[in-house]
Image 1 (cartoon, rainbow, N blue to C red):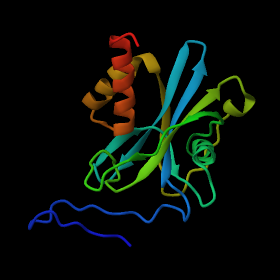
Image 2: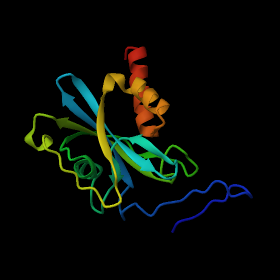
Image 3: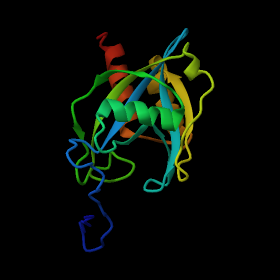
Length: 184
């Protein structure tokens, strides 16, 4: 059941607890780190989507809720295909990650958990040539990709242009930048 947290007498901050986790599932959803294998180097698949809670178009990785009886890997492959049209192969599933009840790291501003799922997309495959999305009628998503080596700088540029950067994308960009600076 949704709950409302009134954190002050002004009631300026409201949080919700979603009812999105399928019975028996340890997670609500997945975030997808989809890497497009291009001759020029690996690119991260991203999307632009308007998010009312932040009143901006947000730069995000593809993501979505898992269905009942579905693993994180299965949900990621399905969501990737539905939202972007790409077909890929799962290479890694992260530990469960949590967004705290009062966290503002999630554009949806809710108490969720997820697995980040790494998916490799072979651009030479025929199914990755003429993409067909399967968006829900209330989804309006623009798909694009950026070279991994430029992700941090491109996030700064996109923010300067007025976009909001989802915490998952920003954290990934920070990690790549730290690895470059420290030659990890």
